[in-house]
Length: 90
Image 1: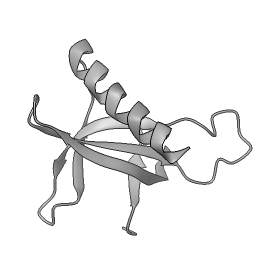
Image 2: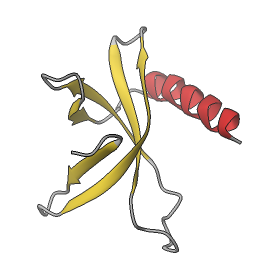
Image 3: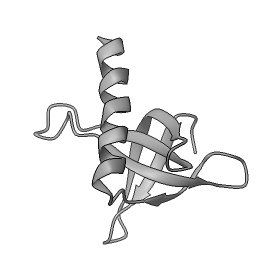
């Protein structure tokens, strides 16, 4: 895997390369999170689409197993971090 890239396998077994935009940890939930976007979809309808998941680091400390965020309060905190990150990028 290239640095700052992650390969996601969908439910049909298709692999898609994604760029890791941000990783962070929320102490309130004792979890790590990754924000990532598909690579190579410039000009497509969903080119601004980003994905967010909590993750369990692999043995090297990199993004390993991804998990959905299902709690509304957790989502609110994650969204706050993401909004702050993108506001600072502008």
